[in-house]
Image (tube, rainbow, N blue to C red):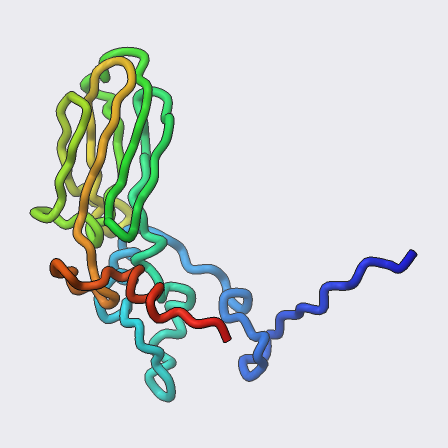
Length: 191
C-alpha cells in the first residue's frame, strides 16, 4: 500500500517569495473599536490594488481589505436562548430570533453590537415582535461602540435590523447600484 501523498504547500518568510504571508510573518493586530473604526474608513476600503510606493501605507493593515464583509453585527448578551441569528451583507440586514423564559428585566436587556458602518444613525430601521429598544453609542477601549438594547416579552421573539447598502469604498448604494458584495461577485474570475 502506498503512503498518502504529502502536503507540498509551504509558507515563506521571504517577502519576495510567492508563498510569503504577511499575516504569518507578524503578530496579529489587536481588535478594538478604535482599530475597527480606523480600518473601516472609506480610504481603507478601496477595491483598487495599490502598488509601488503607496503599498507601504497598507503594510500595517494586512488582511483588512474586505472589512465591510467581516465587521458584522452580533449578539453580545441575550436574555433568553438564541434560536438563530445572522447577517445578510447583500441586503445589509441582521436578524435575531430567541426564546425568553420571562419578560426582560430592566437591567438585563438583550444587547446587539451594530457596526456604525452598516447601521449609521438615521439610516437604520428596527422591527421587533414586541417590546422596546434603543440604539446608543458607548465609549469602549478608546473607540465608540454602537449597541442596540432590546427589552422584550416572554416566549419566542424576533428582531430584524436593516442598515444601508454601500458600494466598495463606503459610498451609499442608490436604488439600482450594486452593493459592495455584488461588485466583487460580478467581477470575480477564476484564473
